[in-house]
Length: 491
Image (cartoon, rainbow, N blue to C red; front, side):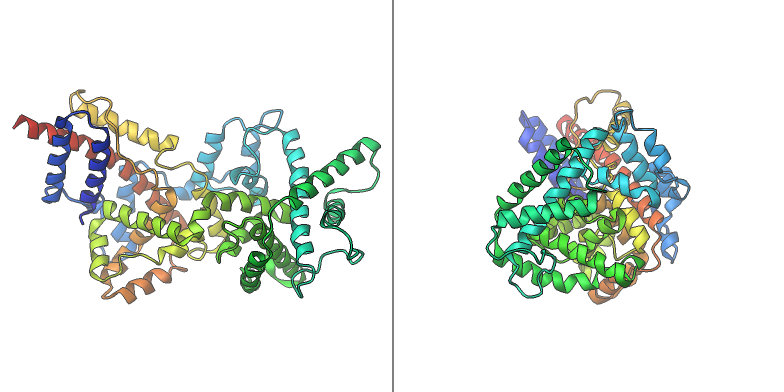
């Protein structure tokens, strides 16, 4: 099916739901027929594809960037602690969250300053939280994590090789509450308290934290069989997680792998709806490397997975791959049709890209950068930046039409998140190679071996260009649908 025909059909469904009279239906039907007859080129970016043999020429990126008004990422500076602190008020609140997200999107975060900023970016802290609120949250989350960890360790204490961290002084007749509380106090004192010189009020405060966390953990449902199944998979995945980076080497590296395992089991044990799925170890590794804290990594990982957990279900990932197919049909139907002719249009290779946020397609350092850029949330169809691109094009189209069309709803697909655009951008950076493939095996080989040769900034610039081109062209298409319908009515 022609890419723009698919787009127009979507428009037909939306218009049909909102139309108030038969005239609007005539508008939609006329436009649909116009597209179906092939009177409009379906590939939005076809005029920006050059005829050169190598991928860089094939993209003609400079023309794309001029068309979409995208800046060169090679000259964009990362967000630093110094810049970050200019956006913090005296109480610790971030005064301009949108500006922070924009800076992260355009230049990433300085590697030395990621630790503190990721806690905001990935939901551990609210941007409008104060210093005091975050200090209280740190204490609460630490004891709650230790309590959850102690709970599954207690429940599985008789399973050989599952856990070795429970205190040897634990008596067999002690209840789960007693054991968990004892372990929470021990862990919190070790990692968060510098000495034992605290007054009565402070001791009371800590005792309350220990009791509250213990109740929190002991009241959570726990499925021992489900947890055992998760541990069986986790214990296969953890030893091979990012072993090529210095962080996991040597004796310290082994301890960090133990932390990785603790976090994954703790998450799986108390999230029965998703438990553990392969790939989570790779996602978590990013957080552990950057945050260097088992507690902080657990909570950032938890908030992140709760947001994207549907991607770790088969139905959710198939839907996301379908979005890549759909966007490719809209942006470059010729490439999609060629993939179809080779029986390679299912794009299942995108599964790894989307699940791990392109971790295997770039160096580890670049994988951290693309992760924070994609989840900055700055460039989405319904973000401020996306809305501005749509509104600017709407004004241009109104001016072209003599100012006679107002209040037109634009059919922008909110599910086309930025990682979907990055996926299509990756396909386009290797477009020339794909077009030379003679069967599905060659296509798969090309797309499954992208670990070298791709420049991160180029891919991101292409994705950004595609986003703006999509937004603006969607507006243009919406106006043309109305105009085609009016012409039909005039005749």
